[in-house]
Length: 188
Picture 1 (cartoon, one colour):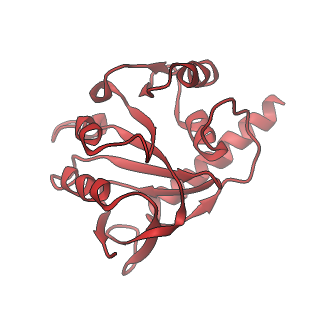
Picture 2 (cartoon, rainbow, N blue to C red):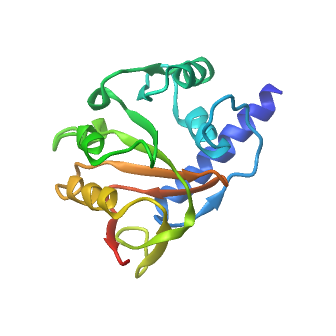
Picture 3 (cartoon, rainbow, N blue to C red):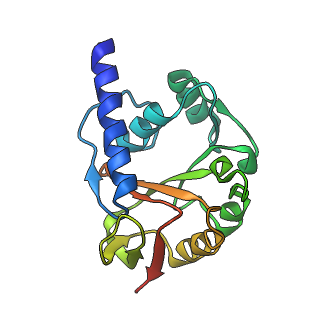
């Protein structure tokens, strides 16, 4: 069982590296994971892979925070700006919350937050065009997340290397990564 867990974590890590190198590429998480939350297996497998006892995360739900802390060793913070990761859903996320994310500094851009957001759908909804490193010409991507959130994210990433990274999952266990280096244009 332990070796299965380690193998699954290694496979998920490789998937996340590939997704971060190819913004807009969609992968599907197909493994089983222990999940006692309302979030998708893909999102929980991502926390299991990226979180450890040095990670501070923000999640509004107390019970689900306790589950993630117990599995990963990460600790919950009540202050969004102090978190390494923020876990939320598209229905709970507001532009006001997004503005609280830590963008890092010019000297320490690695101190920025990563937003892990579960949305209704990857593959349907609003149409976005992604350009930048890791994308040959452009990649078009449909997401159910509102253009207001994407436009706010774009503003937060204008002063590179500062900005925030998005890891987006949906209930069907699709995953997409949008790093701060990626330009996202709202098409419709």
